[in-house]
Image (cartoon, rainbow, N blue to C red; front, side):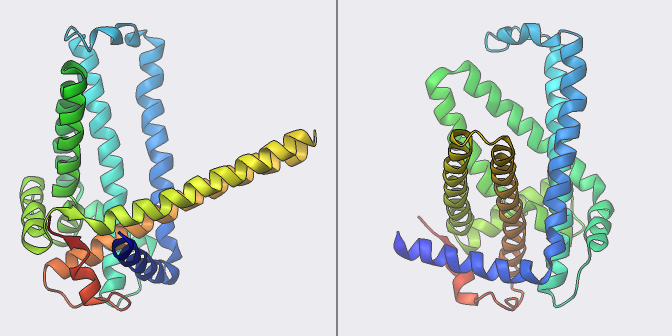
Length: 283
């Protein structure tokens, strides 16, 4: 366990070295977060006004309004499209840096816009899978939730390389999903140590920030200082958001580096070839 954590931390530091050279990569997850909120508001608020959520209790009983199901599917597609679009921009810019270039935010967006069709296709596929897993979890009780969770993890692992593939190759979304699964199976097996390591490290950081922030907020409330309380709350929220943005950016850089390794490209500066080869350990 300690060896795996140590390796994951080394990968985080290598990815952080790339991010330190291109801090503008943080723009992509930031704008993605704002865009996701806008999309959510655009779908949810009109439906609330129309009272469409009154029938949500019938979804689990298999008697949902087809229009509500269609709305949910479109919402899934829109959210996935936003997520994959900005991931593609981030990974595209990271690829330029890993190849020795000096990317800009415009370079990332240019790459993402050039792959709009495949990104939308992948969003439709992901939304379909997400809806099916959601239906399984809601209709099959505890067993369905357990099976759905396992299938969700398997899908996440199998599609880990889809965005780097869409960014670097002229292929469709289905071919990208198949190629992603082949790369993982051939190169590292099924256990995603690096991705889990980044999640673990930043999960701990988020927990510590929230804990420290809660202590400051409690102290500010006890002091009965409104200004200090506002500063404590705002500081905690900003710190948590910043850590989340850094995690997303590092994950994109890490995915780009792993894809280069899987396809036989030379290791980028700061990424040890042996470290990358051990990032995925077979079961």
